View 1 (cartoon, helix red, strand yellow):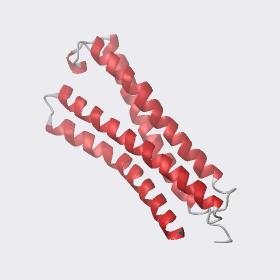
View 2 (view 1 turned 30 degrees about the vertical axis):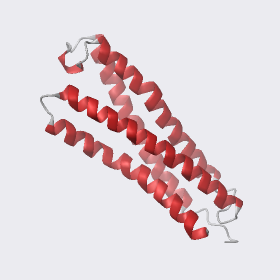
View 3 (view 1 turned 90 degrees about the horizontal axis):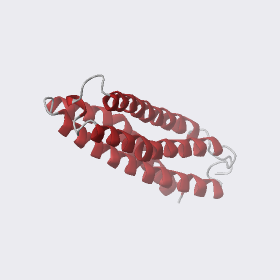
View 4 (view 1 turned 60 degrees about the vertical axis):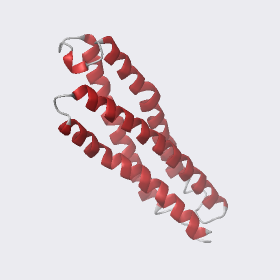
Length: 163
């Protein structure tokens, strides 16, 4: 049971953080291959971001449930899991913020400029706001990755003396 729970936790974190780390590479590749058509590239990357967020939320729930069970079975020290669990909750909160706060606002801006942000004038308020939100989205995803790495480091120290 202990090995199964450790494996489940590891896989959940690997999937989420691996996707977070690899996403910028995928986005850059899509934009590079579809360079003249940034609208299509943005549509594809937006859909991939939704998949990333769904994957992250599922992985986060699995991780939280697994850590809780491991603490209940004294595989992990119950007091030492509080910080990693808090970081996972923060990661999930940031994921929800990006999915349901930033992305819909970016979509509104895209619609307000006529559908293609890059076709709008540089001084267009919708384009300016879209860029601001895009930058925020990149920072949020980067923060999720950093919090995930911190979670892994903290989880390395939660082993119970009893296990």
